[in-house]
Image 1 (cartoon, rainbow, N blue to C red):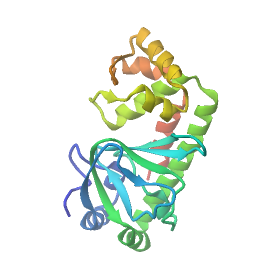
Image 2: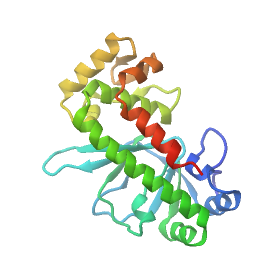
Image 3: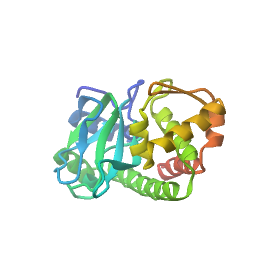
Image 4: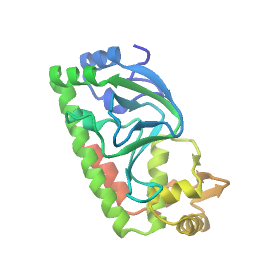
Amino acid sequence: MLADPETGPRANRLLARLAGEDRARMAAHCESAELEVDQVLMRPGLRTTHAWFPLDAIVSLSMPAAGKPHSLSVAMVGAEGMVGIPLLLGSTASSLRAVVVREGAALRIPVVALRTQLRESDDFRKRMQQYVLVTLTQLAQATLCTRYHRVEERLARWLLMTQDRAPGHPVHATHEFLAATLGVRRAGVTRAAAVLQRRQLIAYHRGVMTVLDRDGLQGASCSCYAADCAAYASGMRA
């Protein structure tokens, strides 16, 4: 065991919800890893060998688009969750690409040890099933968001989600990255960022975004941000 998933600023809240005995067993099988930006943890065509529980790293889950150079981001995973949901469902194949977008620490567990935990612990299995259901709800919400909401609303939502997973830190994101993440043209990102800046909600300079008014940013975001938070809170409730 190289890290404690329960306490401290580097903690995974999903693992922290486990009962003490199950948490200790998980910690015994996990190893610490430092994740780097652009590191690929999971992708279509690649056998998934580990599940990852971020501590302060952030991972983007995206769907590759046929004939396009970029993938569309559909979810974000930080200390509230895990990367490797297919493993919870008995598969080592994934249709999503998982890429690190903020460097930091994570715990990882081999697939064999993970499946042993699922088989032997009712509490662990229940928690992971809850997380799968929450993720499915949030993926559906992301589809609705992409279809119906304005770019500046979606950018505000993305910034809030990122800040939740890295509180107190500025957000590093180029126009190109945000365009690929939101599935829009770079000009759309420029206009959306300008709207939020004029309202003095954010400052954006040379690829660094700083949230100036979080309450105002929540007001500028679409309803999907609040829906995501509510889905996690209710879905993970014991």
